[in-house]
Each structure stands twice: as C-alpha cells, then as structure tokens.
Amino acid sequence: MPLIAHSNLPSFERLKQQGETILSKDRAEHQTIRELHIGLLNMMPDAALEATERQFFRLIGHSNEIAQFYVHPFSLSNIKRGKKAAKHLKEHYKTFDEIKAQGLDALIISGAKPPQDLKRAPFYQQLKEVVDWSYENVTSTL
Image (cartoon, rainbow, N blue to C red; front, side, top):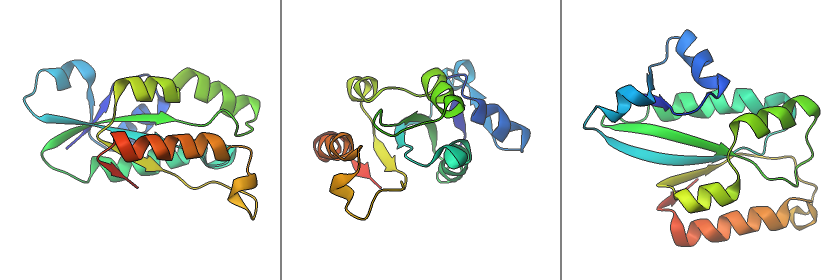
C-alpha cells in the first residue's frame, strides 16, 4: 500500500515523480485501511542521507498491500553533519523525544560509520537509548 506524505519531506515528492504511490495525508485519512507508523533512524553519512530515505521509503511502500505507511525519519544529534544535511534534518526530521511521545509500530535503524569500537562512537549513548527504548515500546525493530 502507499506511503503517506504526512510532512513536506522532499523524498515524498521525488518518489512520486519516480512513479511510486504516495498519498496525501487528507486522502489517507478518508480510507479505512490500517495505518502503521515506522521510525527510520537514519545514521548514514551526509552524502547518502537523502538517498537512504528514498531507498527505505520505497521498500516500505512495496511491502504490504493492506496498510498505509507513515514513515517518521529521525537521526541522532551527536552525529556530525555538514550545513546542508543539518538543514535537511532540522526541516524534515523528528527528534527522538517526538518519536517517543508519538510511539511506533516498527523501527528501522540504518547503518553508520562508527569507529572500530562502537562504544567509542560519539553517538553511542544516544543509539543505546534508542535501542533500549525500542525493546520496551516497539513491536519490531530492524
């Protein structure tokens, strides 16, 4: 079933231009189809940030015929970002606090470029907090 364009994230429009089925929030609200809220913790480097969004959105959108998908991207503040990526995150991504308050049906955690010892990564504690929260509050985490 389709993805729901519930925000002005540019990936929705780009996927729509590429032929993907993207519903407006208004249209989705008038259908009697189950909605699923999926978090996407995007930790990819800046160069792959938006492409990673589109790849996961496309996969999610093709995965189930009987649900509408609301994908909620977020990242970790301790991952260093360039100006363009930081602006994109600020404008289009939720904070982890917003994700926790809203709740999720599922969570996807993307890859990252950690040092050899993940525990030494500057984002380790934040990532651990997300994973610990997901054990108690999310049905499925990938």
